[in-house]
Length: 230
Length: 230
DNA sequence: AACGCGCAAAAAATCGATATTAACGACAAA
DNA sequence: TTTGTCGTTAATATCGATTTTTTGCGCGTT
Image (tube, rainbow over all chains, first blue to last red; front, side, top):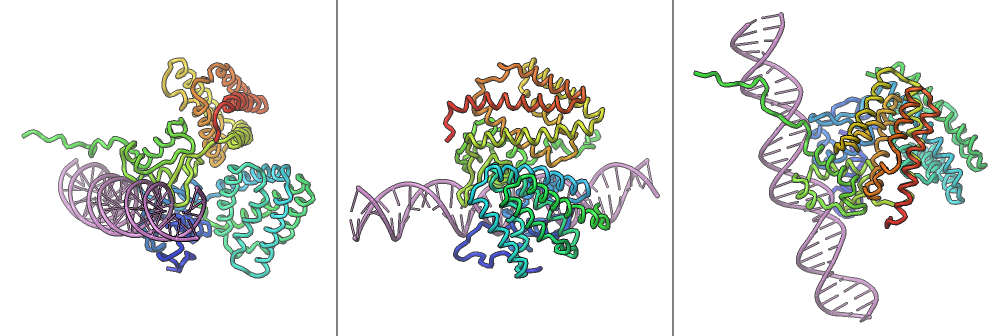
């Protein structure tokens, strides 16, 4: 229906990414942003039409999303978008706090100039996108948070955090963009985190980070009350 | 005329498992046990022969294993078994300690009769397989450890732990079965963990669990010194 | 000899088609 | 009415074949 942000270079030169990769990224965005509803059946044929590609890349993409906990595979009956519920939301929030706390502290313990500069840079890009009204704020927001953890030296942990980030932000989309979380002074929270990092104060940085997540979490939790979390 | 035995059951639909599931489980075992070497190229055609199945299930299984960190996907050049190295090994061990500690404490905090009994039961089955010399000791060993964490109420965390378990045990296989870790008194260590759980002493249980892992880790680390961790 | 170019072989990625399986509804028997 | 069976239909899972991409080699040029 809507034209998807797939590179409109279907089959000419410079196929920078495979059909599978495209399908994976597109589907993930569709699910995270809630354009595909939680619990919704994901029929291969339908998605084939929507993504303009063959069934094989779709299947492979869905398999990958299964491992990201964004899609469930039903025995011999195909796939569906992962359902949502309060318990799941709370687990994601809590786990995220535990794991990001760990990763952030280790990043700081391994502090390097390059890492610190990259954190500042990521922050700048995010802020700029925010004021520009550029469409890629969400991507840059994730990039900022991941940049903070990137120096922990544990790639598997970072991957876990990245997955949890996506799972969490999905709830935000589902709760509705209305809640536009600029309503809180999120910028100040981001700044506080960054400042603590630059000041190399791990406890303070962690405090700010977790409080940032928990505030968003509490806010979301309230909104979710009014939503059917079947 | 004899009445034909119209089967009330349609047909002997033996295994509920799909070709993909079979391929996934088989390949995972092959990689975890080291029958497929770390870094080894995994050619679809070759695996097709070996597993006696089509290319599609193989591809899908490999995709899934990619998310388990057991297989790497190279841009447009197929798959290979994940390489190994000391850094990776150390991350797995350390992360495992962090996450299992967390899960174990939560399991104990949520303690129920059923869970406690299941832990005892899992332990019994593992011990029995050990003395029987039954071939499924490894599976039961994993089952025991997972049973300890199962009550934490955070399924995503359990899944992470399960993945890390597999990644870790792979190193044990690679280090060689020669090291037969019965050489240490592992049984006593298991018993100590279980006892602490039954006694509901979280700190003690966690101590025993982590020491169990760290001892195995240190042992393995020594063995890995003599192995090419390219 | 080293380097780049282009062709041929191999492998991966993808597509279209077939075979399997589950969902649905009608219909007959109890 | 209720229950259980049988087709019918829709969707999935899988296969075989085609298209793309990579790899490796040979050859000519500097």
